[in-house]
Structures are given as C-alpha cells and as structure tokens.
Image (cartoon, rainbow, N blue to C red; front, side, top):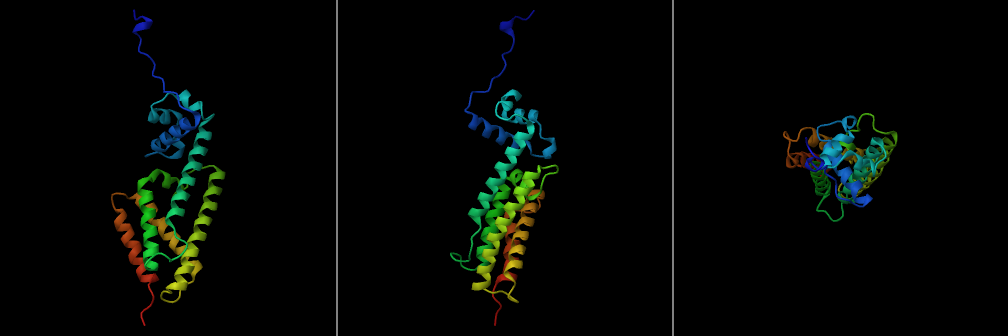
Length: 214
C-alpha cells in the first residue's frame, strides 16, 4: 500500500503577481493557437502550454471567453503599434517613393513572419470572433488606411507616377497589397520568403510609383 509520503507531489506554479500571470497565460494561449482555430483553443491546452494547472488560469481569467477577448485585444494593439512604427506619413526621409513604400512593406512582412499567430488573428478574422473585436479591427484598419493615404498623397506630390494616380485610390491599393502579402507569408511560409515577397512589392511599386520618363 502506498503511503501519503510516497505519492508523487503535485506540481505547483510559482506565485506571480496577477499582471505577470495574465501575460504568461496570454503568451501561452497565443502559442497554443498554432495549428488550431480560435474555437479549438481550450483552457486545458493553454494550461499545458504554460506548464501550469488549469485553476491557475482561473485565478486571472474568470472564463475562457474573458481570456480570448483579452488575447485578441492585446495582439491587435501590439499589431497596430508595429504598423505605426513601420509606416511613414510621407516620402520625406526616404530616397524616393519606391523606397518609402517597400521599406514599409518589408518591415510589415518581417513583423508578420516573427509573430504569425498574432497576424493570423488580425489579417484573417477568426470565425465566431467577438463583435467588439471585429469592430476594433475595422477601426484599426481605418486608422492604418489614413496613414497609408497620407503616404500616397506625399508620393503624388513629390513623385507623380504614370497617369498621376489618384492618391486616395493609391492608398487603398498600397494597403491591400501589403495585407495580401502578409496573408501569403502566413499561409505559404515555405513557398515564399520575406525577401521574395518584398522583392515583388518593390517591382510592383517601381512600375507604378516611379515618375514617368519624359
């Protein structure tokens, strides 16, 4: 008969302040999403990823939905911060329009590759995502589009391309192309490298944004 002393001791997670525990759980939730849909993310999978007992998660998140809402909000905010850091408002400070745009696209693609699960949540809206998250995505995209339009207007002022492209439509096109390349980098990481995707954006920008030769 096994005595109490002989039984394996239950592993307990080291105590952490609530804020640190929340971040640990959200980091684990993001990692546990790899290869899963948001609907398949469970408290069990997050606990296993973090190496903690499930009750520890409930000490900082009352429900699975609370955890998911917090995760989506955090990743969206971090994504917007990355974009704002990468996206200039004008051509100023860059050699030319092509360089301004392609450097931005390159920084964006590399950000996507470095955190594919984050950007999958942003670029491909998860099925059954909360309505508030969908609204936040729309608001965030509008803010990014405004910055892209500012860059497009700067391009139109300083380096008009063939046919003097409408800067508003150009801004929409520039953002859509970057988003498309981001989705491809997530869906086909073995098919296209970041350098190849940036090279495509560079060539496309060169054919579109360079001033027409007299």
